Image (cartoon, rainbow, N blue to C red; front, top):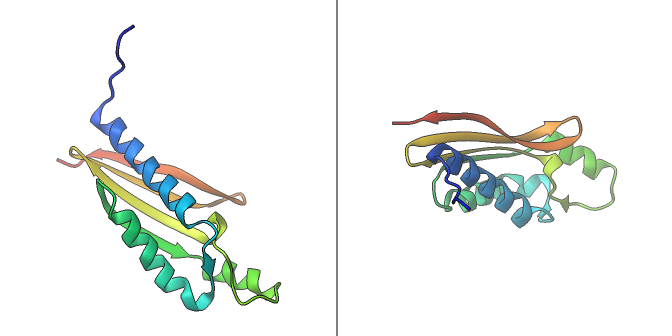
Length: 120
């Protein structure tokens, strides 16, 4: 059997996927309220940017969706889920830049590659 090899661009895409897996599974369930949304956005961005090859992470908690959720509840906070998040992550691996996003599409927090380019 021959050993499979991958390109640097494929490895960069894999790294982007790892960052989203970490983001989603580390922060899902975190208590969030409108008053704490900004600090949680910053905490998530900084945590993801600490990971290897990540050059930028932008996290936006959809406050309108958060406020609608809380209007139907007696609680002052709710749990963070993908439906409250819009995220962009940029990875640079061996000169290949990958831009990936998570945003709501048809009621589902879809994670996708936006672009893969040679950054050199």
